[in-house]
Image (cartoon, rainbow, N blue to C red; front, side):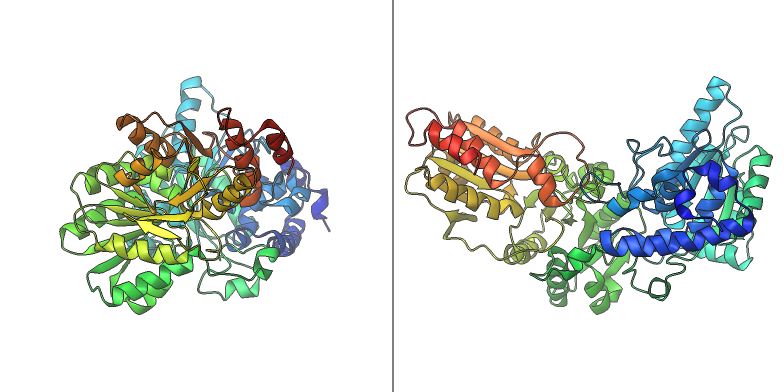
Amino acid sequence: MPRLEDIRGPEDLRALSPHAARALASQIRRLLVDTCTVTGGHLGPNLGVVELSIALHRVFDSPRDTILWDTGHQAYIHKILTGRTEALATLRQTGGMSGYPCRAESEHDVIENSHASTALSWADGLARAHAVRGVSDRAVVAVVGDGALTGGMAWEALNNIAAAPERPVVVVLNDNGRSYAPTAGAIAGHLADLRAGDAPGALFESLGLAYAGPVDGHDIEAVETALHAAVALRKPVVVHCVTEKGRGHLPAEQDETDRFHAVRAASAKKAAGTPSWTSVFGRELADLAAGRPDVVALTAAMLDPTGLSEFARRHPERVIDVGIAEQHAVTAAAGLALGGVHPVVALYATFLNRAFDQLLMDVALHRAPVTFVLDRAGVTGDDGPSHNGMWDLSLLNLVPGLRLAAPRDATTLRRALREAVACDDGPTALRFPKGASGDDIPAVETFAGIDVLHRGEQPDVLLVSVGAMAATCLEVADRLAAQGVGVTVVDPRWVKPVAPELVGLALEHRLVATVEDNGRVGGVGAHIAQALSDAGAAVPVRVFGIPQRFLDHGSRSDVLEANALTPRHLTHALLESLPSGWQARQGATASLAVG
């Protein structure tokens, strides 16, 4: 019998007998369950592609043959089979193995993708490059989850792939009937017909693609046979593999809520505390909609992850799942607003990037009253560079007429949501991070909608806190006060547009500093600095945020530490910014730097 630890690469896998390969699948499943329940990770999707991954690496010669994964969260077995079994224990941890394909880890990881519907375009481009260069001895394989076919980009790619029968691309359709949740739309219905044998290959063959299937994706030999036949055709072909999400782990197989799509780390499960930002939003929206029959909610295949499950339970006729199609969601929301309802579009902050044009030209240009709720904003940590929501504040600051809130706690989130939905003359957005909402942070006073969280004895530094950075800013104020520096900490709550009263308050201080877990370029700090410049203010501004680079995965605290967004780092930087003659002295700076 083979031992999993003896599989150092695909060549070891190809040497196994079919019986030995099947035995290896059982070992992989045990390892996945044992590991993901400790580290956290995408358990359900990977349990479903064990045999499929084995077959792929027995038929194709990676990395000479290119295997692309869509989405990348189903690539854990691929990583194991390409020599990273031991590294799996460090999954999603700082300095450890990424939860998505990662080119820095292995030559077998060709692209880095954590969102859906992109791999077919990659495959089309790579196949075209092979044709231009006269390369004919390498396969291009795209493993596409059924949910990815709900995204328009996948069909743009298929339109091009099918138009060139001389360029072979093997599309492996991993059909488990679910993406994050049951796959939405007419495509799901057609795949169900294919599984039942009612319309074998109709849709794909009508486009000019060859079709093989449906194939039992848990039968290694059957998948291998289908893949060999697909390669022999020397043309674009869809190999339709039917799999079961969560296969081999009974709790995941029986789960109807997708709790096992991605499981939390053991340490996170033990941590008690305040409700998550997501749950606070979801409950408040459901309550709000009870008194507002015009409020509808939209999601892009992520009903539960974005907190809309309670809304769906209480107002099922007013929730819309468009599939993994953010662009469509945003323009459809504009249409809903045109029709007299108030849409709330719930997305992860990083996934709004895909729909920026629709937000700009379809929503904002038409002054459509659409509310965007952006979960996982700022530093998300363990999901890595593509999931950190560090772009939304910069992108949204570009949008004319949009009002943007960054609540600091559960109470201000509830208030911001109700204020946003009350707006009927243009788009609104609010953003919050991943994880627990933390303790409420009360204001000591409020004026013009701006919350003052702390007032120092003298107006030396105005510290503008953005969203969830409030607790950090208050600790900075305490540290600076100990050095004789007076700090006023404010939370604008609505960070766009910049309130004139905030500009006036800034003029009363000698230094203005802003703190946000967004990219420094074009974020709230840059927006405030521009407002001060426009007002002719000479007060200096320090903008603290994330450098414009992709961040490695790790815990939120580790990422903030690495990017100098901790109380210790910020205090030291502000002390160094103080002009000579202020109470702070170099000695204080030195002592604080090591504190």
